[in-house]
Image 1 (cartoon, chains in turn red, orange):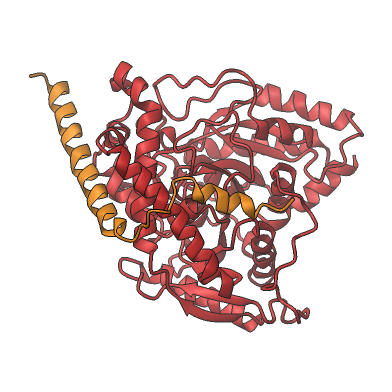
Image 2 (tube, each protein chain N blue to C red):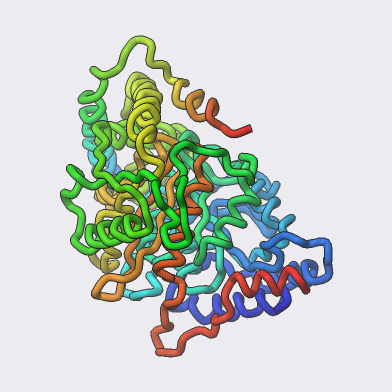
Length: 465
Length: 52
């Protein structure tokens, strides 16, 4: 399979799914095919990503233009493509278009007045989650094997969980944010969504500023791993006790099932609690509101009607907080990181937690983008993910299978800062056991899109032709 | 007052409620802070661990 063939297939799949999902903001056919021809004509591309079709949440400046961030308001970042877009282009990927999101990435539902709602490929009546709604839907529908998003409080992990794909938020600052629409710069992290760990790892390694490999040795890595028990001796913590209120049964069941699998694979799992879990959420909310409010204050003043009502309300919150609130929240952040490193993460290599507390809801049951209630709903949705933006620790949403109703389930894995590769390794073990990527969503007319060539296979062929 | 102004007033009121809630939640934790807890500590703690 050549880059042109893989790209043509991705474009065909994008066109077929778009009316059902509304996951693309733009599908850039001509540019993608021209780019794919360049990749095929360049034998210098030895990257494992050469010829792989990708797409970007519409917050990245790309060669084909500026992002709109899901907003009717002006967002001006200049024309220089984001570092992420440049690096992935140099690695030989083929950018096929820009993807749906919540306005300014400041919600977690995938509902939008500006773009229309994004729909979940597993059940078109249901929400994708957000704010990286389009990336999650496009990867879940097997349009692209990897898509690029951003995560400020859970914006990669929540939609990944609801759409049944991997969603990775690396350690804070592991990937450049240059050329990306900001929301809360001290939490914003470029994140990756993918169908399988191999392509996720390849994309992460191409983008991270941390040296890869070798993986820095850790005293908490498994020491007696065997093929049957690859996690033998790995200390893992289960973060659930004391935080179950409002967590749906299917979510709890998925976390407990995954914990059992980890134990069968040799991990030593112990229940843990984070005494400052609520404190982390409270301080993170102050930081997000303050930074977002400051960044967009002038734009909101100049063109308030161009923002959706829900966004306007949340942007106004920051201006009502004090400088003391913001500084105290950042002071609590250092304290929380120190406590996590000296406590929880000195005992446990990996923490297991829910991603979103609920399964993907029906769109009609989600607050609309025009609702001032959207903020409260978002805060509840991201309460298991936002603390790890606050701490800056790497965190990965991993599919665990499907609920009895056929909806995707997931578990969140968290590690100490810069232990990103450990999370990918644990996820690859779970992937081998569970094999979530075998099951694909089906187009509503009953005709499954022909995307049976696996991304690994496609990539291997693309890189050798 | 126009309908648009009413909407804006409602949004400002809703934002004020959220802001008061955030401040109150933060108040529950401020007592844990010590004078030596600095606003840049978080960044230094992460950067100190960055593999080189």
